[in-house]
Amino acid sequence: MIIGNNITDVYEETLDQLGKAREQKSQFGDTLEIINYSCCIKDPRAARFIFTENRKHSLKYIIGELVWYFSGEPWITRIQNYSKFWNHLVNEEGHVNSNYGFKIFKKQIPIDDLRHKTQFNFVVDELRRNKDSRRAVMFLNLLDEDYPQMHTTRCLCPILATTPFISNTPLIYLLKIL
Image (tube, rainbow, N blue to C red; front, side):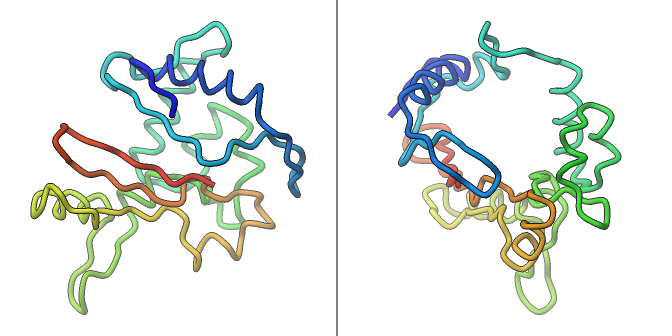
């Protein structure tokens, strides 16, 4: 497990681990693979962005991407002005499948025959009901929506699911990543 005081510490140690990672071939090219990766950020409020000499920064892009995610809008129009990268991942409807904000804040999931709520609201309600719950899961990779398009758009949300829970600490947040 990689343990760092802040996100920058974890990022730099992860780069070191990638230097030792095995090369893996995929349909989109070669990639480096770390199996069973885990990390712990001791003080997530210490630095909310990665600040290191190893990475070029564009504060304009970071802010644009965050605004796009938090808007919950899957359309490319809000993000394409910040990076042309997203133009390669758009589907025929102008949506980007890997917009976490849409999946967390906008998409409605059925609770019963009459009620729907967002995954974010479901998680908040579940943790309020039981702070030790392991049922507060948000699924970001949705089979019925994402898989039919993944070969045409080359866009698949790399985070499969998130599980926030409270256990003798303020918050533990697990990510299941491809």
